[in-house]
Length: 228
Image 1 (tube, rainbow, N blue to C red):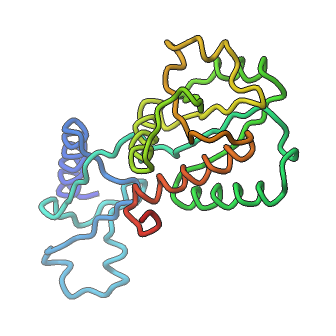
Image 2 (image 1 turned 120 degrees about the vertical axis):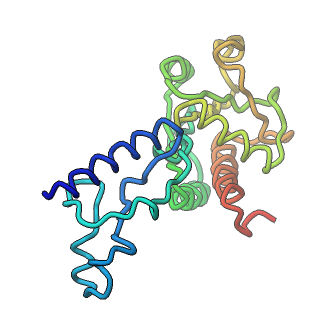
């Protein structure tokens, strides 16, 4: 490596450290090509490709620091895959197949928006309480005593909960008898509660409704025409 390229490499590293300290980042797949370098003007595309600087292990060639564009540091929900867990008492195959198919549709659609939605089935309240207490993310109880939110407000809350929970949020749905007393009484740990409807649903219906609203929340976030 020539002395000039060594200097440029040092400058590039210093600029990167400076950008990080000021809440900026360089995406991991950024490619920086030489722009405006006299020795690079008029060269073939194949030669230009060889002068590309990859942030990983490719060699440094021509570099125009003045053309380097920095992007704002993304939130944790952008840096890490978002995971929404629906924790529910019951059996997966206990409901109607068409209801399961409906839920699966929204689970798949959410995944295409960068939100992984998974269901964890619990055999009973003891297992449900145990899993909730061990959960490291944000836990939200689906309860008639919870807040009633519009789809727009629910979308805001979902992403706020994901931020708080390190890109993890768990929604808890009780069985036929509702949520266990251990969860309802512990408002310090399980204070976040949301009401899906004033009506009463079976727990498998509630899961499908919640799955659709999670997908809708991701579409509202994207600003698409799905939510009207």
